[in-house]
Image 1 (cartoon, rainbow, N blue to C red):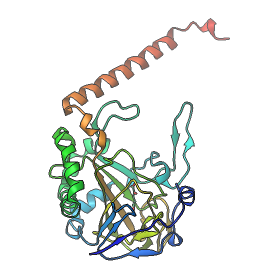
Image 2: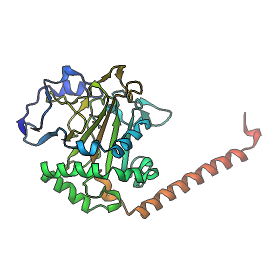
Image 3: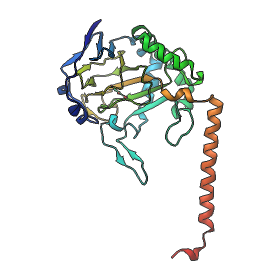
Image 4: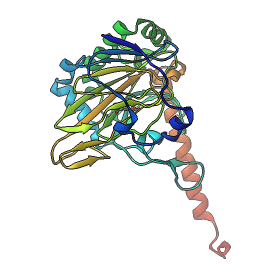
Length: 313
Ligand SMILES: O=C(O)CCC(=O)C(=O)O
């Protein structure tokens, strides 16, 4: 495996100007196609690129179909990664970005208005399919352990401190983001374990160009092919380039006409999962929150029904 220590290639100002933007070939000098370990200027790992490392698992039709089946789920919560600006939505502090085909599966900690840990909606509703992904995620874990044993061990310590119902068995992962055929704008991941490491695998069908995973600060990119795995420092700015198939540019989902599809699978440990109670404890919190919401709604309906008509000007 080639190993190189990188230098920062653009100023902080130039890097910040790229946040939320979709990158192109002008943003990198080197496109990696073979196994490579890249270190940052401080000697810490940036990327370990392992082409074809997950070919066997990616060729399993059950696994492919499960990842593919998520293509219809879109989210407005990807912020800069959606490649769009967040816009204010309704009253209050809510904002939304361009909806993109990206889903979170596995477990999620208490965040936003959901003050309890849970399996994400798709996961809870599709447990058998979620379980079919285990061999794939265990494959990612094996390569992680082999190539970054220190980071793996740190992540496994956090796994030990977490109730097993929130962890993918035989892996250091609680959570997986699955993206389908869109260029992620420049962003840094958040919420995953700082001292651990992230992983990005790619599954592909059909023919397209682009979709290179770029680290613009260092002007390097990975030519992610079907079955490739990259262990990545996702706290460094990254994004992937525009995807073009025979039918044109794919900004938002796979091409049904020519069948071109790029699925990226990001597996990680959510740092706050160590704070979650057991599954029954967290389900109890979820039910109490739903009860409170219902009571509030009923009270509002009752108030509306009892307001005297004369009070209306
Ligand atoms: O699909 C890719 O190459 C990047 C995905 C990514 O960075 C993310 O989901 O946060």
